[in-house]
Amino acid sequence: MADTVRYFMEDMVPELEDLEERGYFKKQEIKQIVKKRTHFEYLLKRPAAVKMDFLRYAEYETKLESLRAHRKEVLGLQGKTTLADYSIVKRIHLIYERATRKFRGDLRVWLKWLHFCKSSGSTRQISRVLTKALQLHPAASGLWSYAASWEFEHNSNAAAARTLMQRGLRMCKGSRQLWLEYFRMELMYARKLRKRRHILGLDALSGPSAAPQADLDSLSEAQAATEEQAEALSAEDAINAVLTGAIAKVVYKTAIEAVPDSIDFRQSFLEILSKFKFEGVESLQQAILDSIQRDWGDTEEAWDLKARAASGDQASTSKAVAVYEEALAAVPTARMFSMYATYLHDLLAQSPQPQQDKLSERQLALVQHLLQLCKRALQAGLAEEALLLRWPELAVQAGDEEGALEGAAAACQALPTSSAAWQQRLALQARHASVQACETSDDGGEAAMAKAARQLERVAVQAVAACEPAEAQPVWLLAFEKLTALGSSSKKLTQALLHQLTGMRQGPTRGGMGAVAGAALQVTQQMQSLEAAQRLCDQMLAIPSPGGSFFQAAISMELAATPQSISRVQRLFEAGVAAHGCVDHELWLQYAAFEQKHLKGAGSVYWRAVKALAQPDDFVAMYSGTGT
Image (cartoon, rainbow, N blue to C red; front, side, top):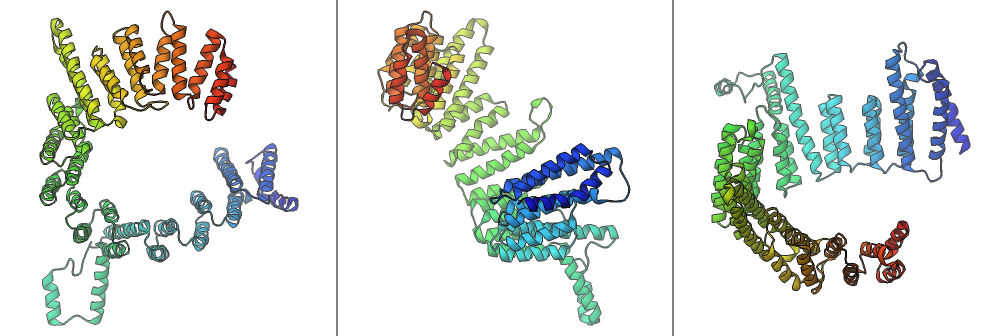
């Protein structure tokens, strides 16, 4: 090992001397470079070499080369190119070559080498690296795509790029990425040719696709075309076909034969095609849509793609809307309504926002259209949850508070167990109540607020009763939050909570209905009194534990009380560890700290916790760290 490392280090002497002579690095810096390189060389010659050592070595040399280039620019060093100018880049290539020999199956190492080749301008090296990589990884579609892209964009060799794509498709049968990149490349080639002909002042198109049909007829009738003219005409036809995307069309047809059962795959072709604007693109787009219609018929996805393809600028929006209306007549499903609404919502999001956060005429028209669509879907019984939740949001955007409440109520009626629908309704109801109270005169403001709170509490009780218990937690928490903001004591909601908790099993250690019970304690203490919150706590202690968060809230409430009841806090800790002592090490830690501070009995709590906890290691470590 030492001999090999010494050989490599001796081989560096000429380049290091040149780096010092040219003024890139000082003598002390050269010593540091030698020391660092020696360290890396020993790491690379270990029996069990690690890939990261090669990569760190290459990264170090890359930074060193960046520093050399920066100093050359700052110092203004010019003159004949010497060993110092390219030795570091050459060494980085050597490191990557050694890495790929050791880890030839790791594609990431090859990709890093390719990335360095491109960033350092090593154009000759990149072709050699790609050749080696493709020999070892013929099934890596990304490599074939990278190689074809390099030939097309850097070497301007469309024929070589096309050959690489075709070879890649033979090796990676069914690779969607490769088909899409091949399609994109042919479109880029057609656009490139059209630009070149335009610069040269040539006609964009000629031949049968552009020449008058009468001229061709007379040519046929007179039979005056010579063999050379026919060949010229045939060559011009081929050029015209390329210019209008005929090769891309062939690529698409072959691609859907290889991957025939994916509409998403065909949608990707449409997305690529939408970025190109030249003659022939529309016919290619229509060919793709025809194939979708042929293979998928009256499916929602096919109609959606057809409508979006019809949409272009603002003037084309009406065409897309007409297609969607036709689709609803042919395929009246909830999914079709949702796709229609998603399209309109995308248009709304893309519209420029006018000043003062007001909707423009176009945006207002889109909002009204969306609201009508929501109502149509609801009347037909074909409204999905996302569509119904969008209704109130749109009404708020349009400044229609009553319409938003109507939409939220309709969503809750259509989806009575939806937690999201009830949360939206509670938030809108609370907002409406606050606005009404603010608009009411000073004399009637308090009464209006109380009335609004009662109405909101009725809705909240309906909401928590309708939702599934597993999804009701955010509804409970939002209801308590909004009622507290309106100054309500939430007595009816608290009673509903007690009733629901009575029939439930023990809750989780954190979150769940335990968090809801804790919120109820806080609201009761804030809006009524500590004594009322303690009575509620006693009622909850008599039923199965709502969860560990309830005990956390109850203990915090008692610890903050004045005067503090030691016996009551201890009773809560005992109830908490009895319910959750096998998993809640944080509760045991709090119990031990409380006993140590007030009763000097932390030792007994510690041993009880160690015996009770299923996995006491975390508790023991944290207990030792606190010094209790």
